[in-house]
Length: 78
Image (cartoon, rainbow, N blue to C red; front, side, top):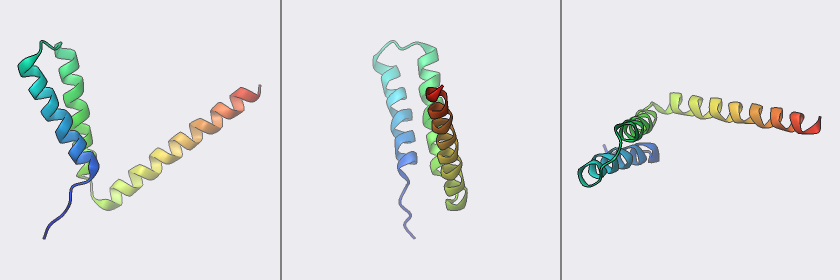
């Protein structure tokens, strides 16, 4: 059974690989390397979630940004 990877997993792998490759050729501060690896690992973990949990996470994210946009519009009216 073949299962295609979600785009989040592909992005996470690319970020991690890019960070490790960049480390070999350029002098990059440790903080930048750690932040990039952390972001890559987060993308990988999000991409590996089950479909149900992934959809729930997307819904929560939409709800959060919808709430923020509503707060910004109300703030602009005053």
